[in-house]
Length: 145
Image 1: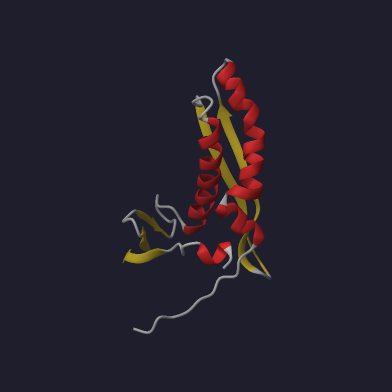
Image 2: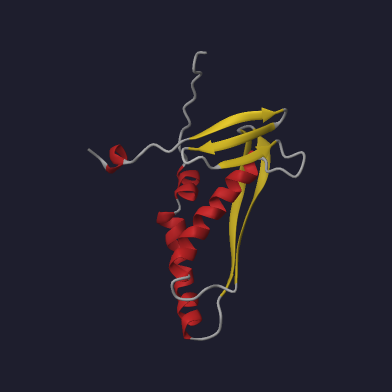
């Protein structure tokens, strides 16, 4: 049995809550509201960017905050939205970290770890970013009512 066979399947359920409005619900009862992006709601593509940023933020924060609590911690994820012969998709996804640690030895240690932890998140740890970069086929099916 491979490691992939032993891993639990992750799932969310998307429910329509009204015209152009949806909720994503996880197995633990967590809920995120989103929509078409015409109001102040998040659009699905923004949720994808947030998932990339959230995943790598956790990877980096867990390790660096053990050394020093950051004074500022922000991760911005941006991309170009294009429509071409391949259809609608994003290109040029860029993740920018703005993390400031306090002066002193603990802050120095956190700053020293930051580049390696960002690299580890990108290259190995962040499931969301790794999935996007590696490209994973998406199977679709219609469940008969």
